[in-house]
Length: 384
Image 1 (cartoon, helix red, strand yellow):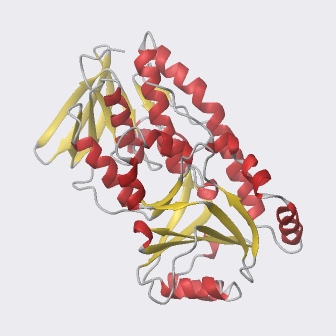
Image 2 (cartoon, rainbow, N blue to C red):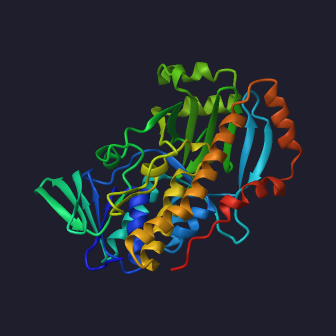
């Protein structure tokens, strides 16, 4: 790939910042453009499984990242009505790579610190993209910023601008689609009377489920309630909709200062990733945004960055790099999508099917449950 001009990366979220750092590891310069004027706290907690942490471990100080989050050994599945444990799934990797729960803003800040230390990354905040066209054997990206309008000329534009990707709309790919699910996200900051969860916990029930885990180095708890979007009224009614659930979960709901509603959107599996004669490629949620039932949205974006950077570094041409990247990533993304769909069905089984689910999980050993996800968590990034 041509290295005389920097690659342009759209978006300074997990995918975009990781992308820039992975390029820098291979001496490829980039310009990261982000329409937000500041990298502020957005979203809520997220989970980083070992497959993602193996990438991040080579981008910065992993001990610092671990200090900003909380290491988890297991994910405990519980009955929604009683809170009784159904199964405990080990999530730490055999090679010692941990599983981390962390606030999205803490991860973004850690990545931004690494970007600021790299002379090969030019981060431009408050810069929106207004158009993309092929130009002179490369791509022209029109931008708008406080200092005026302009354009960037590059060999490649990497669209890492999220599930509601403006670049996807510019390409005529349409909007992200509603999935019929809604997430209510909240944080418990006062843990004096309500200790944080011991690891990651999920309560399963008909049509909805809840997930809780510690963030901010264990000083806060992240709570997510997922239910059908058609049930949405307002946050004040959440307690009533979960009033027959585990009392401990009810106490956690009451302890949240305020909930934020997030309609969960996805990207159609058939969305094309490569555009404009292989001068533009979508990665992360812009390419394959999916429901959070396997906690792999951020992880897949982080993996994307490592694999794409490797192909850009090794391939004899840009089209060959993007073809090779897509051929490698599509099967894995499809497999993760299938796992997400499986979790969605199994988590929300009604009575009496839920009794059969619980009985099957209870009979399985932790090792056998861990083997179900070995293909996912034991992934290693390409060397480079």
